[in-house]
Amino acid sequence: MDGAAFYDYVLETFKRTDKETEVYNSINDVIDTLIQSYPFEDYKFASKQLQIAAIGDYTISLPTDFLSINGDITMKDNDLTKPLNNISREVFQEKHTDIYSTDPKTSYPNDFNIYGNLIYLGPVPDSASYVYFLDYSIKKTTVTSVTGTVPFTNLNRKMMKHLVLASLYNDLEEFDLADKHAALGAAQYQILTDREQKNVHPFVQQQYRDM
Image 1 (cartoon, rainbow, N blue to C red):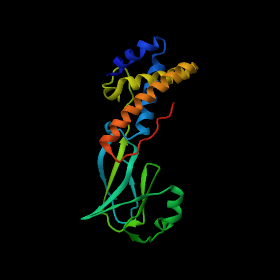
Image 2 (image 1 turned 180 degrees about the vertical axis):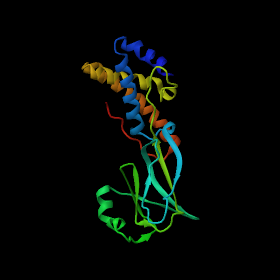
Image 3 (image 1 turned 60 degrees about the horizontal axis):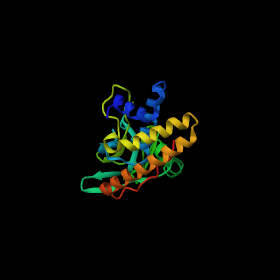
Image 4 (image 1 turned 90 degrees about the vertical axis):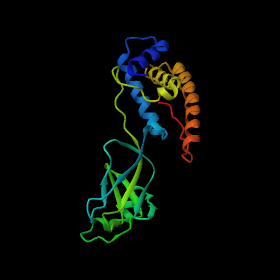
């Protein structure tokens, strides 16, 4: 469904034509939450191949459409494939202080950390030929009345409608209606994620949280 068609679909229940801006805001809020709550196939990008620019570099810029990582980063060196450990910023800073020195020790990287739209590698890679594969969820464009397909409506438009209504009614402080539609939306979400999980095992299902 395009933006205008989905807006009309929501208004079949919502009825109020004076809240067009709020409806589209809720649509976009729900899409943002869904994209970040589960690695849906429509928002994955097949492994992006990244490399450092030169020996001595230890950061790689994230793709411009990066939203969130799915899984880990894998390094490939000819026939060797090695998964890197995703560690917290604090642990990375403590473990790899050497990367900031003027003459750091170089080696196969073991760890990575994402911070400030950069991938930090530690230890500093001893070769610029290593290739790093990144699986990630992509950002979406803002839904308006003139956009193409509204994300997720091709998978479960009823889920989208109920979650958008839950968001709208919550903002209007009509909490009984918000809770009703949140429960209906969560039930449809469960159906959708169960189906996705069968297709993409072993991804672990994440619980949708009300907006």
